[in-house]
Image 1 (spheres, helix red, strand yellow):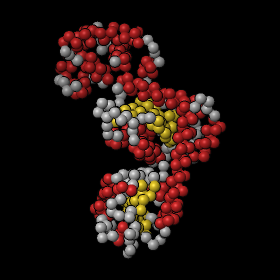
Image 2 (cartoon, one colour):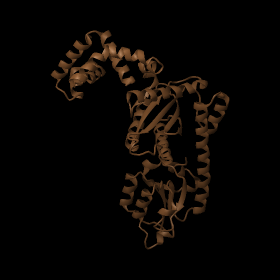
Image 3 (cartoon, helix red, strand yellow):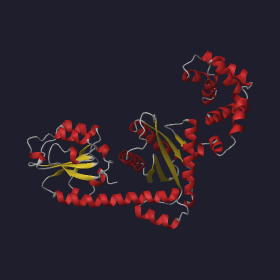
Image 4 (cartoon, rainbow, N blue to C red):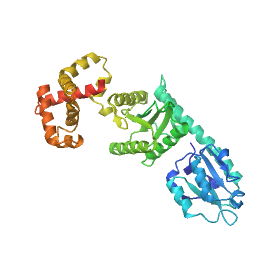
Length: 399
């Protein structure tokens, strides 16, 4: 989608200048609206660029601060002010502060320099071009993850047209969104505008670190494909953490899982990366790893469990390993199973377990001794510790 940063690259905007709201430059512009009155809310639908020129500037009712606040409240993307003696000749600091806080790009251009009709015409062509590019990107990604017979030559041609480097290796990730409480709100689909804003932000996180990424969405899933850069595993982990924190902050009322598929060196195999990422989502749902990033290469035992149809066999194994603990907890209203889980997840560290459970370390030591007695397993035996840990993982997976 055409963004505020793209606006500043247009020839007609050569003398334009961004004066505040830099962090909102990734916001999309659907169209431009030239304000004729202070009451303009009924003429806009969101994602417009507000152009402030005559006659509104010369109106006795003109109030720049109020206009900016109304624009922000109505989801306008940003504003272009015509400046000069006959236009806006002073911009209050309060307007600049509002622009920065709300991530609302505020740009100025000398009023006598460029006819607005030229700006509108050039912007219209640019918006149409970006819409076509967005559609082409989505078509390319959809043909990879949902296509039956992948035509590598066709993919390479399409990728060159949209400026994406399809050379391997590539990998695919999926972000799946779901409501925290569906009973509260039965509208289960993320609004289109919110998906677009989110996609732009995620794209900017990758682009800032020189990563190329293609993004598309279906239902409440965001699907991305990225080109792997050698010796960059630490960087890409940091980027996904940034994305996670952004989604936690911005997607109020929504939970999410993030699954990252394996790298593939043959374009014909890229569907496998999508399937890998989808398996991560399935595992996250099973073990309640919401708001986390799961990598297929780190799924380990969960990958095996997802491929098995022998739930009765797994239940029997859990019962043999943990049945005594579960029965003891139920009969005595204790939480030995939870203690075991946290104890194992923290390398059998008594102090760490006591801190996480807000329980005195002597109480944890007593519980650990009780667990050994009931399960007839010793935490001094590495194999028996592994057996218990596997049993806890399988139990959480099944229940």
